Image (cartoon, rainbow, N blue to C red; front, side):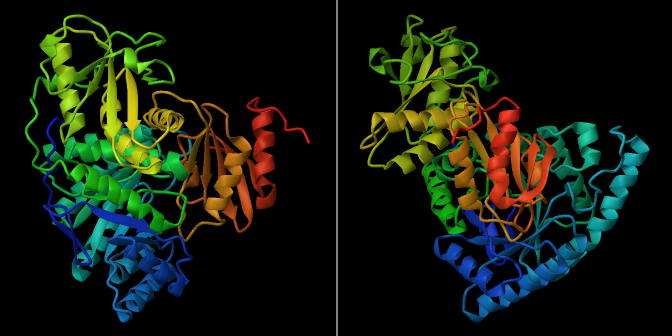
Length: 545
């Protein structure tokens, strides 16, 4: 936890004339979900994203034809007097990346599948040092021509690593972990630095906000140690839709923005892409208001992250690691209200306190207070009391998710208490529980991991997700993924118990964990088949007619 807000200094990378990093504002991005070969539809959607406030637009370019079509989209936009920086999204196809380096303003590649084979060996063994180095040499041979072409055309590069889509080579050595994701990025950065190419933006994403935040933090520390200052793109991938998707994104992205990390952001929702932009803008603006704030007292930051473990539990808590929710689990009015601006030495007993802050950076001041309280040896359970004025329920959920994410992911808070003028108590309870679930601290509902869709998507994601939700809601603690295609689906739904993945036009494959169990079934039968699978596994009883 960084008590005082300050942006991480980075180099500036230009993406089609939009500068990312440095002193520039956090840039907002989204991605089209039209068929990439449909130039008119893709250009029209890019304009809708830009009109909503999106500053950079990504388009899937799964093949050379799609990469060439992106050039046509660019020309069409320019003919209409619209300058929209376009990013080509490439997986498994270095030839498409080379073509895109000429047609796009930025090329995104995934180090997990750019040059490495999906499986280097079949026996599950870790590669020997000699084999590992040889594989890295092959990566460099494939990567350097792309760097040269990007340099020639003034095209930026994004290294985008996703949890669950690491190469087999990296997986066998580091596991599907934040360390593995970090190492996957660093391998490519080391190659780029040796060849003096630095127009790079980096993203490390996961559908689990905790994994995503941990990885970004680890990568930032690693880059600083290596003297690297590349801008960071933030996002919780496959966040889903509706309230849960917004809150899940807010928890992960907000926690990192509060620490000064992040130069571009995308909120990945299974909705029309232009609907992502207002959410992203809300997060950016909420955190940016803290710039240049009155300083907050800095104490021994070594204690940060263990605040909850050092505290006594609230009445009714089974264990200190599961925060409770005001009015749902306890009556907050019986608690002693404490201003985070006060001196913690004034606390003379170990009774619970409801901590609030009127500072422009409330999470920093609250974290500082709790850490100073713990250094005094006080074990008071601390309820995080956040109040919002003049906001609707959706905005309250987004801002509270960002604020509480910054605290909860670092171990602060035995309970949470939300107030928002005009939002009823039951809705505030729902928001609170959604935040705790996003922070992986308390599971009270079904978790949906759903991609936002792109040009590879093989069905209507938004309506399909709704059908799956209607059929499976109320299955507490169960994680179900709805993924548009086979390219990223099996890997990037790594956190899911079950998966619903597009296998072809009108066809779906169902997964148990990472294993396909019902293959290539008609889409109209897929939801019923999913319920049958859950029934067979003892997850849900058969639905009666």
